[in-house]
Image (cartoon, rainbow, N blue to C red; front, side, top):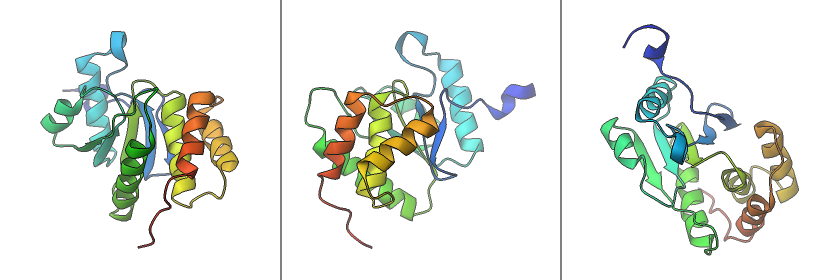
Amino acid sequence: MKGKWAAGIPPRNFTWIIRDRLAISERPGGFAPNHRRVRRQEEIIWLRGQGFNRVVSLLTSHHNLYAYDEEDLDYAHFPLAPNIDARPALADCYRDLDRSLRDGLRILVHQEGLGDRVMGVAAGFLVWSGRLASSAQAINLVERLVGHPMGSAGRELVVTSARLPPRQPV
């Protein structure tokens, strides 16, 4: 690979939630009808080049997981389906994110697109982990970082997250 593409390209809507530690974006390679294998590979190359060493997928399917295996990029999969009790997946996801951050990993969290649900998970994690004191603060911060308002699906995840058993101190 030569030229400007040798370093890869950032995933669409890439946004830092915790600078240089935790980011969110749409699925590497794009979402369903726009998904391209070459683009996915370029985005994974960029992630590796930027020091990312863990990807957390919230997709309800196993899409992309084999690509992370092929590129030797550590990943976790916490399917977050609409209209299903999100608490078990959120609790597992937040414990994984907390452990990964403590271990010094650089993490990307994604779902199909960068929408309400990914924003809600990011804001919910900030509250659950004690990094922010209230759901309102977390929602406001994530909305400012992403650049658009969070809808009801995301806000519901933040409220659900605030009701999970709290993070256990290390």
